[in-house]
Length: 321
Image (cartoon, rainbow, N blue to C red; front, side):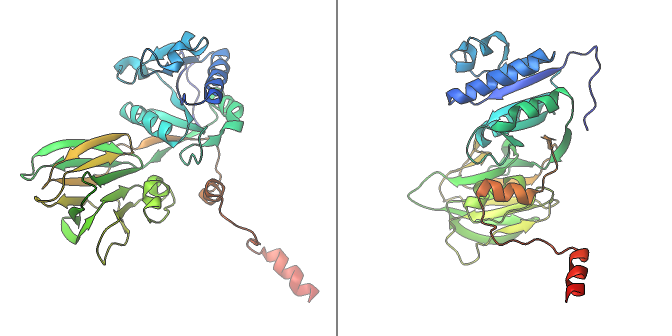
């Protein structure tokens, strides 16, 4: 469990709400008022002066901070995200930069990254107020992009995945996949996805990759619409270095991190991906199995499941026989 902060220290929570629906704004107001009434300072993330949050009659009264403001995260206990996976990933970028725990409450559709759903918002706030939560590390990816002369031209990080994507949709991206400095396969493709276990239920899953349990340490590689015989997903060691090279005469590409940050990849460049040096600090409120989350989020059919037989049950059946 998390340790309560000193009584003399002002507790602060950064609220990152999705503003696309009226109900989301109402949830943000409720969260802010519950936190504030418990003596916790509320900071609200706004992206611009005309942001709906900045103009809101209630939320506009709380301390407003911008993502680019270095002081925005000073003294923050955790980042509270109210929205779907897209909102969570944008908030995680800020949380990751400042080593802050992040808690997601799903107000979107699937919301795989959220800890709880919107109908549990009040209970989640109570748990935060009572410091009744724990923090886990979630694996990330670091990436470096090098040009044809191996000079570094960009770097970044991802929680879910690094998606290498062809810009020219009238052709294919000619790429070579490399693992631990050895070539594995060359193929034309729309791109290549390099994912963490957390991201295995996101873009990589849609592209045909397997679901990896979050507790697993591994890197998932999924060729995206590759035109070749050997294009199966690969699960490699978390200690491995994965690289994708593009041919000098192929199309330019981009490396997209978590769908919200991108870097250019000119022809002949390569992207090198390895386990991130800094994890995302993930707030957990319960210990429900990942299998339950998978079934609930994807609405998987489990009709007919009887569960494991208990030893006592087997003995009773034997005696009855």
